[in-house]
Length: 310
Image: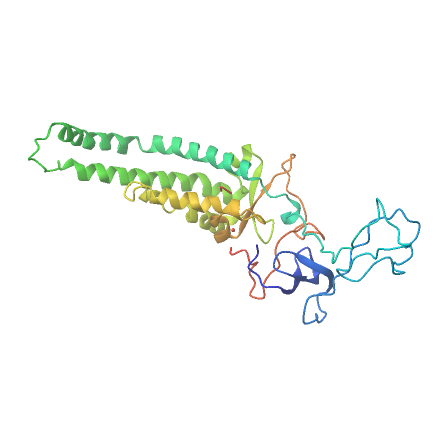
């Protein structure tokens, strides 16, 4: 649910108009963007009645074929009844909210984003394992005395071998190298094309929230840093950094409108499906009905809090 309060806002699908946002969706008909809107919500038109088996409105029905809002169809002698004759008319008709299609592209599915992130994680771990060979050897040399001490120490001896500090240092340095490898793998690729290897395989791409231009280094770095910053602390914080990263990614499941994880909200990005031909050549200004975004609030934010398993 959007956090934007109900009110009149410019329609993202057609900036030349404004419509009433009731907190969950657009309501009523649009009016020109430069027109002075009424103080409250627009008058909602009633939905057309269900087809009746009767040839005309029939005795007891209003000439228009509708009753007042919330009223029921009259019953009694001379009033048509039976299959196809409604027992009550709808109270109101709400305009449906369009399926979100940022700049004409469908949002990427949760499954595709999860699998793309899994492929990228495996690639980063593989590259980091190669980069950490020397640190891993030094860690093992420092850790072996600890194992021997733990297995053979007398009950009265509690002095930890001096190599323990070096073992911890090597583990921290391996975390730093892992973070650096992740940065080199993801940030430049996302900045230039919006796609890492995993995203290419599963046909998805990261885009700016406000345009279809490439992300650029700054926005790509912000998106990566929000997710990656706990990585160097994996060893010393007993799993808390990993939990923070999992929570970050799970936010895309809660955001049903834009499917944004926390790192997407920080960077103001969305993840979309790439057409089969791989070409992203749609206009930067979407046509009517192609956007399902919440309205822009008076302060300039979209109300989603700027929110792939990515």
